[in-house]
Length: 207
Image 1 (cartoon, rainbow, N blue to C red):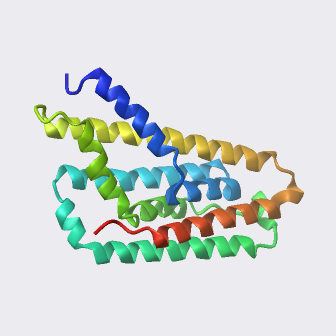
Image 2: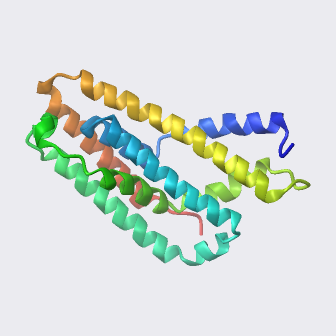
Image 3: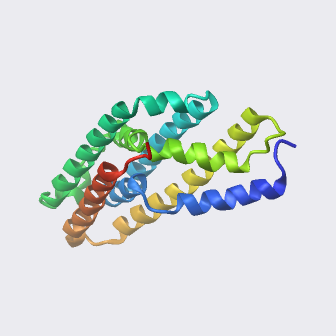
């Protein structure tokens, strides 16, 4: 057995607790699900998981030190991503309420996907989190790569399910609101995006 069942179940539970804690990626998932529907939020989830996959590969390759030396590059991604989210939030706040007209709204699917990806990469704490969280559940006498791979994939599955539930609930809430509440939806979504952008802008890894 790669890892004991007791340790694995403990990791699953800990991953769930971590996944449901609000953060920049969760705010954009909720915001886009409210503003554009469940599909937009799920595309955010997909982009987020691509970013998490990249971080996991970096951890497996033992490149954490290299990434830390590239802190300025990560800062630029973080600032650009934060500015983009804030800009989208302001656009929603200034919207004229036509967002709810399906015929006038075309969903930029790749845009939602890359939003999730950029937000994850722009958060330097994610790499530090993976580097500190996963090793706590690794048996030093076992196969390191297999254990980290299993735990990393497990965390991704748990986070994907948790984030997808948020997207589904937010998308359902959007569908249940009447047309005359479209402006309210836009402002709530805009607030989430601006909040996520500010959160990302202020997020700094421990150097």
